[in-house]
Amino acid sequence: MRPLGQGIYLIVDPGGRSRSWLINELEAVIRAGAGLVQLRDKSPWNSESRDFAEQILEICRETRVPLIVNDDPARAQALGADGVHLGREDPGVGSARARLGDQAIIGVSAYADPERGRAAARAGADYVAFGSLYASPTKPQAARFPLECLREARQSIDIPLCAIGGIRPDNARPVIEAGADWLAVISGVWDAANPVQAMRDFAHAFNPDAESGSRPERG
Picture 1 (cartoon, rainbow, N blue to C red):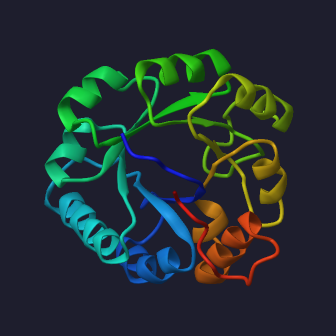
Picture 2 (cartoon, one colour):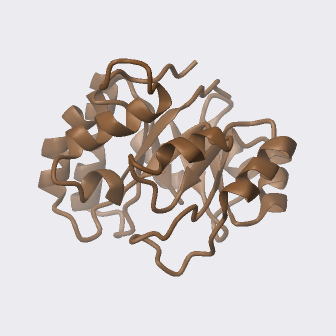
């Protein structure tokens, strides 16, 4: 397992977005402040989706940022990614660890359920994700996980916490102060008029006294 530190967790989701546009923007957006990247591609694993994934992996290797694959340990293994993020319907932490190895980054969605987060930590997850913190355009029906619940979860979970759901540069700082180590962002970057500047603004939330655009330390 790797020490993860803290920072911005950029999710690359081609649903409703041009794959070529995402690839063209990705390197600059990562260099503006991302510390982790997740590929969230719900399409079948075919030549098109694999080519897209391999291009993302190449950019992540060039920028020295780990790539996590959403949902599918087998796809993560086939790609040679750095880890996997597991949801409620996916294989468990132990199964993913056996497939991907001790150095893989394994994250688990705890949704709005602190006990699921604690169970994931006991099972050996590297981080757990809670949300939706705010109203989310990506998952508008997701249960909300208010800041006070995040503060309580922080008291009982000793691995990094990731917050997701409706996080934007202008509401990010309270989430960090409530105990989030990582901010997972999708629409807050990709739907912005200037994705690179949006990432800079997110990174600045971790270091409000630092010069805007510097990447947070990742440990």
